[in-house]
Length: 194
Image 1 (cartoon, rainbow, N blue to C red):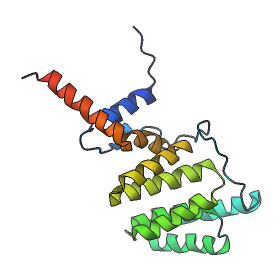
Image 2: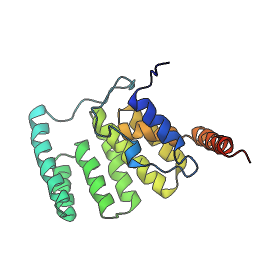
Image 3: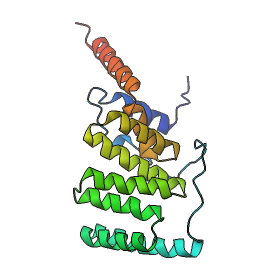
């Protein structure tokens, strides 16, 4: 009998059941993390952009430069560049999201990171930024031990098309975790009945 399962379905099943007992994510289990954002699941439209397309294009160029600066190891300089963008354009959500990522690399406080992510969510005018900000916030909350907050934010990230969040949300669902543990235990018992 032919299988109708897609590679996404198989990755989801693997992510749910592999390591179900400890709830850890293995990067290789999550495919398509940089895939295009699919908005068919989102029932809400983000608000309109506060800035025109010409300004957005300029801001994106400045952001690309800041990201390249961070990638070269000059994270504090990148934070300064992103902070300059935010000072000039306080409703440009993507800069808050990227600054939060840079802060994470410097081990800044969770409250500082979450403040930027909350602002990114509030100001976002596109699904990609919303998906990234919610997913990044979920990761921070999970690291703090806030499982309910992590689940909610992964769910929101998935709603806005983030592929990592789509893979993580089912694993953060407390019922799915319990189910995964029960299935893993049953499979273990089937493999070694003694």
